[in-house]
Length: 296
Image 1 (tube, rainbow, N blue to C red):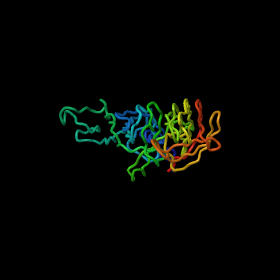
Image 2: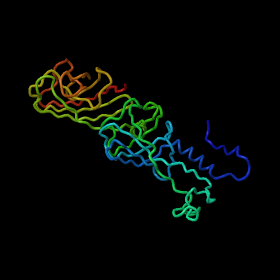
Image 3: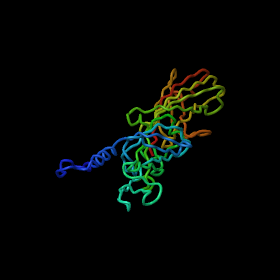
Image 4: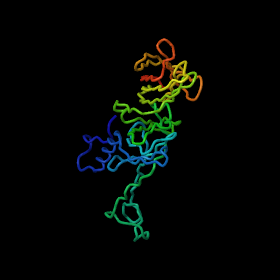
């Protein structure tokens, strides 16, 4: 397997410079192509490769990849469309030139001879919208997976969508081994009774098939809260039950990811004191670190 042009095996004499173009295009097709992104709703993303990047005529499996800065946060499933270039079929036409255009002398207004804008500039056309996936292609993108201002890398895979093709999308930091931390606001409550006043903030990151998260819970006034604390998770785990090791500032606690026995959010982490008792009193502050799997 090699690049298309073998310069060492060409016969002697002058060779067409188009061989260089062909070779450079082949090398360029193995790169990551920077694109500008546009979208009307955050969900249908149009990518336009920057000037002086390799010409894209069609989607090809696994290469090239496209990198872009998101201009909006998605609110649902995402499709990606890339602006490519139509093939230019230059041939000698009946006015004896090679531009394939109408010449005023032979065909009326609108033509122009070689040397005056010849050959015609490439025409950008959408290559077609394809669905976008995460988790190495196992899951469609969900609301909020694309964040405005984030840098994303997408790679086309022909086997997706029953052979019609789709894109795997990752954050650029994931590719570099540095995963972006995202914020979310967990809901927090007690298993029984009602918390008088409590707040929670959280950050999480998606690393391969894992979610790592940190939650800070402040129980200002416990009220009638009892049983155990419950807080919601940013992304649903792939199993109903999953153990997680967690710790909290000032009080040793343990947690279990499980279905919420009540409402309003599924799934959740149940938070106990080390001896199984209710962990909170007025003024309690918990810093909870956990992880769980999301692979299908």
